[in-house]
Length: 212
Image 1 (tube, rainbow, N blue to C red):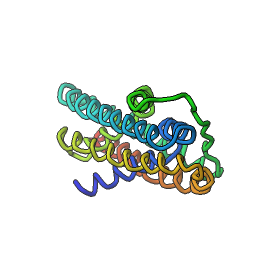
Image 2: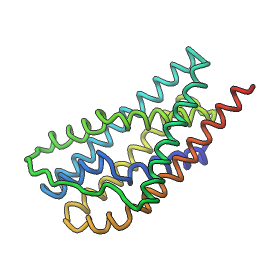
Image 3: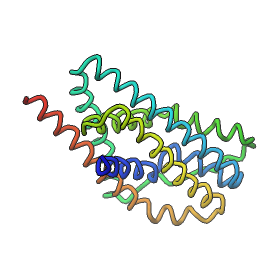
């Protein structure tokens, strides 16, 4: 189980490090308003991750129990999405480009509004929902129970809290842009390898099940 968790966590970690709406929300607030509002955006994002992880773990668990054949479809859908993410990241790595342009957001935010922004950014991002659904499908595909899949959620939320917390601190200093741009290609490469491996494993498991 721990090796499965490690591979899954590596993929989620790479996704969290890579550019996207979450990082853009943290960076834009950090650049314009400083560390405290950016950190509250981070706590909102982590809270949203817990919501998605719980929803996918419990929802997919119920679906699989009620309709066992749906698991085969979920394996192909989840694996295809993970492969899509991996290929997209691989292309970005090959081309050497990444979306690292973040515009400062100077609209004043209270602590509560900053937290709410983080939650809304995460919950309204369809890619986040698809990613957590794919991760849950992968974990179920490795033979883990719904409780084990549910237990992974806090791990993903904690890593998001740490990673985006570091970004909040860095971007609030105003010196992070050059460093992030320099290493963005490496982040995309890790993302491509981790999600590509998870996607291929999920699809291969589906192929073997279909043959049987």
